[in-house]
Image (cartoon, rainbow, N blue to C red):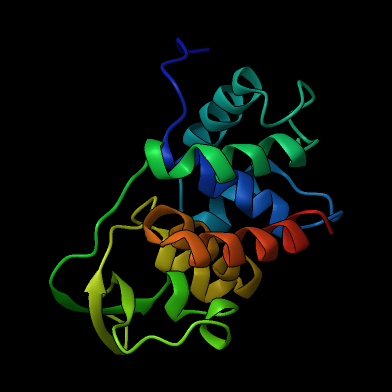
Length: 171
């Protein structure tokens, strides 16, 4: 195992993918295929997450409370973003479900993505493969959009995002 050098953005993507599966069993190779991340990187991600206490030593049991605590208190400081210039992309944060129905905004936030159909202020996703993975998995899409609301949002947006994340992750 490589030396632990702290959590990386793709680790959050892997953990949220596991959360999106709920109680369904999964294999590392399936995570790799579904996220478009190499199998070795998924394996290293799980090792870092074990050391961080975000997944149990068996590498299958998600530590849901720890993940929610990290998302609530750490994500905005660990992987901050500021919306940039207008780009074409895929909506995220408060511009995507489930916050879209709770927060009215005339300035969409998007992940830059050539296949996207919305023009908005861009933020970088946690991993370059996120838009493709989210096209395949709407539950993962909701989780990652909520995490982006935590990364860039104001107090009200963050509070609403945490309520939704707790509902989705604790299922």
